[in-house]
Each structure stands twice: as structure tokens, then as C-alpha cells.
Length: 255
Ligand code: NAP
Image (cartoon, rainbow, N blue to C red; front, side, top):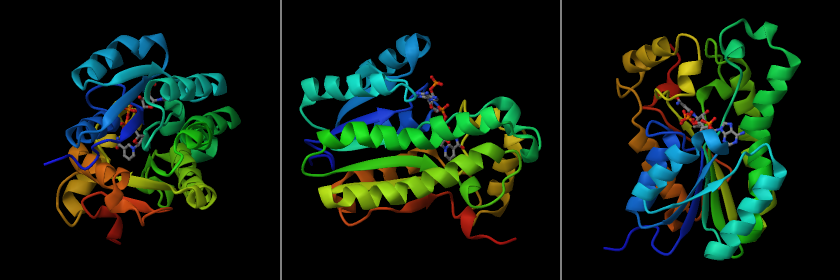
């Protein structure tokens, strides 16, 4: 049986290692026969991401999302290689560790702006760079978290960045919808990754979910990845501007 993404080219930004949500998503996109392109941020990550790309028969290209020039070069390289893009996964966030442990009221101007730039504004600049490659339509997907709308201890500045990210999804969906480009977010339950480890007492968040979520367990990266496949595929052709929760149901609970 042909894969759900047969004949489609997908760009995945944010694979750092095998624990990254972006890696689980890349594996699932590959399983569904997508032609894959991964990116790495700078020379520090090059070797590791190139290795993972080779295992997935994917291309690996450089891209620091804070550098407009690198985004332009990425789009040019994809145009030369594939001619077009059908799906883009933006799985990128960053905040200083000190801003994920001290009281939110202590957040510095610089720390606030850095989190916004890398974690929210980058979706705007990525969308602007890739939209011309999506003539005839496509899917852009980003990763959010419950901290966008609820207070989660220590998530702080990243919660505010995720709120901006989710609003960005809606504005981009409105702008790009007439071109057939859909823009959505998956709000994933907490998963132990390199980024998540930066949040103070993250293991307490995992414990609370396992105890209280309707499914009484934490989220598996593969569950997030299968929803990403759906959103990248034509099965989701009527879905745009949404935040879809893949969190074992945790977000519906009051107490
Ligand atoms: P991760 O493996 O650490 O992935 C974060 C990625 O962002 C890394 O590949 C990192 O690259 C990249 N990145 C940071 N700054 C960048 C820049 N300037 N340019 C390009 N790439 C940059 O952690 P993850 O948990 O999978 O995070 C992926 C996404 O899922 C994030 O948006 C996160 O907020 C979201 N999310 C995570 C959870 C969770 O519990 N893990 C839950 C909900 C949502 P470097 O390693 O090179 O810095």
C-alpha cells in the first residue's frame, strides 16, 4: 500500500538527537514515504543530524532560524533539490535556563525577547521563506504546549512564547489559506527531551500527567508524530488554524 505522504517532500526543522520530537516526526513522515529534508543549527549539531539524516535517507541542510540569510539559502537549496515543498514541521524553541527556574516576574527583557524570537517569531520567518515553494498548497506545522494558556510552574517565559506562537498559527493560517497553505499546531504533552530538561522540576510535571490525565500515562513521541503525519497529509485538507492536543487528554481536566 502506498504511504500517506507518497510523492510529498517534507522539511523538518528541530532534530537535535534521537529524543527530539522532530526525530519521531521525521521517522513517521519517512514511514509514510515522504521525501525528507532535515536541518541542523550550526556546526555543533552538523555531524549528529547528518548521521540521523543518513539513517532516514534524508538530506541535511544548515539553518539557524534567527538568521534570515540562512533561511533564504535553505529555501534556495530546497528549490534546486526538490523544486517544491509540501510539508514543513517547525519543532524549535529556546529560552535561557535561568528563565525556566526563577519566578516569572524576574524575567529579563533580553530573556523574554530571546524566547519570543527563537520560539515564536521564527514560525513567521520560516513560513515566509517556504511559502513560495508551496505553490498549489501545503502544510505548516509547529509544536506548542499547554503552558500557552495555563500556568505551568517554571515554564514561565516559554509559556508566553507559546501563547504568541499559537496566535501566530492563526494569523498565518488566515494569510496563507487563500494559497492553499494550512498552518496548525500540535500541543504535545510533556516528553523528556533535551529542551524539556531545561525546565526546573520537569519530572514533577511528568508525574502529574501520569497521575491525572484521562489515559493515566504520559505522551509518547510516536503519538505526536502520527498526528503530524495526519496534518501533513491530504486527510487534513480541511484543517487549518488549529491547535490539536496530543496529551493523553490532560488539558481537559480541572482538578
Ligand atoms: P529538542 O530536541 O531540544 O528540540 C528543540 C530544537 O530546537 C533543537 O533541535 C534545537 O537545536 C532547535 N533550536 C533552538 N534554537 C534554534 C535556532 N536558533 N535555529 C534552529 N534550531 C534551533 O526538544 P523538543 O522537546 O523535541 O522540542 C521541540 C518542540 O516541541 C519545541 O517547540 C518544544 O517547545 C515543543 N514541545 C516540547 C514538549 C516536551 O515536553 N518536550 C512538549 C510540548 C511542546 P539545538 O539543539 O541545536 O539548539
